[in-house]
Amino acid sequence: MQARTSAGSPLGLADPAAARLVRLSRAMGWVTTVGIVLIVALVGAAFVVPSWARNLLLAKLGDIGNRLPLDAGNQALAAIIIAVPIAVMLWGLLNVRALFGEFARGQVFTATAATHLQRFGIAVLAQGALGPITATALALALSLGNPPGQRMLVLTLSSNDYVSVIVGGVLIAVATVMREATRLADENASFV
Image: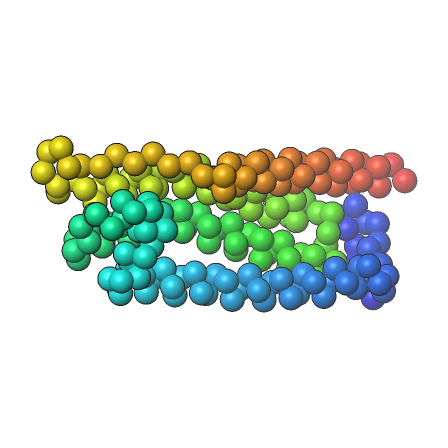
């Protein structure tokens, strides 16, 4: 069984390395799907169960999360703020799931695969920027009802945020190289 790249060159799926890629991609497609479902379920539950919401605040803000009021209104406000990075993460995971689907079908060096990889890279890079912004927005929004002098401004930056920006940039660059390689291969195929 053979699949063709967009340039028309065969990708031998009988080749053991290609067969391993197909198996890995199918498995990772399932892992990604399960992850998407769990993220939606657990984050949704975190804003229904107050102790889980508090744990989420502690994870984002550290000890300051203990000092922020978490009534029903603030819980809803926190859910809205957290929804932004979660939506970006889910968009990225949907794209990486589609990328694994392409790989599982033997479509490795295609413009579509490059687009999915680039979008995943954008989502990863955005997570690095959204981490500090989300923490700041949570602290400001949840302490807004506090009396003057007790409102909080939190600025956080972790090594995870930095690594997300770097990894996202690498993925975007690899997708760009992949797209250019596909274009060149298509161009060369048209000369033959």
